[in-house]
Image (cartoon, rainbow, N blue to C red):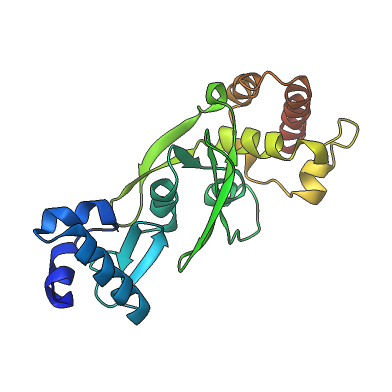
Length: 212
């Protein structure tokens, strides 16, 4: 298959996988070899093994990093630092795309950046919602409350109960009026971790002082 023909078949797809290629009427092995060649030429970009997008000039849609995060490693949802930045709960610009998953911890580097996935247990895989990016592509992201709980849980060793200032001085949490304290605490109990619940209770006290 010529690249022009291939491009016209997939240009409307935000991403495409090698497993879809047999639908194009040619042998999958042949198309795989062509993909490898087009990848070397920079015509096709590999997001992870077997998952691709067309180059910037030929694709019709440039998928967001939120959408790609869900596609690269499933099941997962965007959470922790990247979600905290999405909700403007921290002032820093977050570069790496962070997610949580019930699968093993992993990371993927590709032309769109670094995608990091941290493991949580199946009972804790909750507190996320579906939304859409600027291309109307759906992706899953933690609620503001779950982004906070996931972040604290996955960094629990950094938190001590006698240092409430860490929420302000170290992590500079902001815009906390959007946080539902009761929902925050309920999400923390999913982890069945006494220290996490205690730290979240301290965080709720911090929220209350910020609200005055």
